[in-house]
Image (cartoon, rainbow over all chains, first blue to last red; front, side):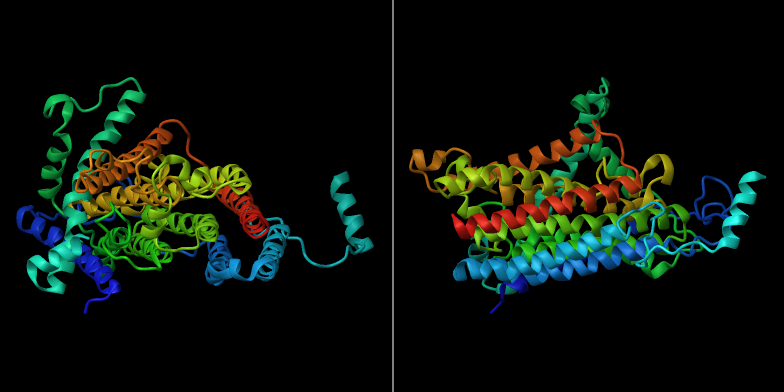
Length: 145
Length: 358
């Protein structure tokens, strides 16, 4: 007996086989005359300069982390969304409290500047300190100069 | 269902499942891609007061066929520095990710690949595979443009997945099902039963739902547009800065596979939007088959309406491409995190209150 997920698997298998067959079929037809210039990495016609595998901006990592949090939370909410009507207002409140917590987390991220893409202004969670007098005088000196 | 008919014909469940999994590919996606590439070129041409392709066939209708013949016989250039294994694997994963979504999309009342109850979660999960494929391709290309494009694409797709998920949650709350077939059947008969007009409910609830559902449809359409990297959200493949993004290094048939996956994806998201909010395969005003008492006509009509709705949304995507300029990266992220997600949140809570209290 083939389950419904068996049919899904047949779709995936078809897709994989289709791509493999298409690439293989074109391999039989197409020419292959590699030269040194062709085998270079494309960089607008110049010789490639350095390795492209460089360190990446930390913003991508932060976005991925926030996404992960939200995604897990939404996955947790889906079963609730299917059944909450059965328990009336109490059922709704259970999910609503969870949603409000989510919203608070979102507000915190927003306030901390994690949703800013270009140059986040990070606000440290400390009270305002008075600047030491030496530094102040130095700043004034610079302004005077 | 076509599956049962194939099962009777072949006598084997495996054969029936495999034949049925081939049907959307050869009867739908390939002809659709042929048509949509030409449509895209013609739409863009006419919006810029040009004529577009005119030489191959009458008004260029055979242009795409000529392009495919050209692509098949193009040399496949693989640069020396590429990470060969992942470079070859990437088109397979991207195409599998977008084609597997078609397994649960109901094309008509009798054609549905797999009637699983987790339809919506499955679609969201399996299209996530595309991100992995894109990152893999961009990394393995060993090309600066590819890597930049792939990283941007990944950041964009995962960001815009959250508004999509929140709106899907709204739909689940209203309809109480995750199954796309049940969802389409639920919005039955006339257009005022479509979810964008409140769904098949009556009284004050329907009136309250109409504005919320219209906003939801707008949000999900915008965020799915971003998920398939179409303009105005096409910074991953911004031609003017990144040559062509994550598939810069690909040529020949592998490039064609990326292209096909993109068009399959465009149709898939259009189909999801129409299944969620615009009644899926349901006709807006009754069926001719019911009118003339011809039951075999109904599935054909349903298929017709499904295709019309899908192509309409694909056309809107093309239309937007020539109307709006491209976003900047920070604007794109701001738009997603500070506008779409809070709005979707508020809609979610209000819809929850309405379903419980009214």
